[in-house]
Length: 134
Image (tube, rainbow, N blue to C red; front, side, top):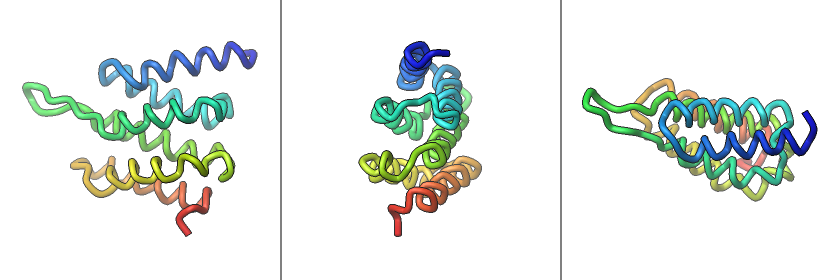
């Protein structure tokens, strides 16, 4: 894909990550993480990607039989982990505080153990690679 087409794909995926049902958010988060990991998510798109990550990290929808959203929150942690690996600390520096606060909240307070573990791994990866927690 050319740069313009790839950026258009990223834009559409980010729209799904910010809204829609849980399946759309889950798929969009996984796609954003992979696009970041592959270097297709341009740094200009980071503010929008982090906004989507923030809303997905706290996603929870009540249903008649319980709640839905652990898979979306888990995918948001994967986005945070992938961003840490994909970008240099200089690129991520303006976003580190917001990213860290979103991840810490999930790591401490999510009711699902696997989501807390994913958030913890994402936080460790960000601190280790970005170096802003030292």
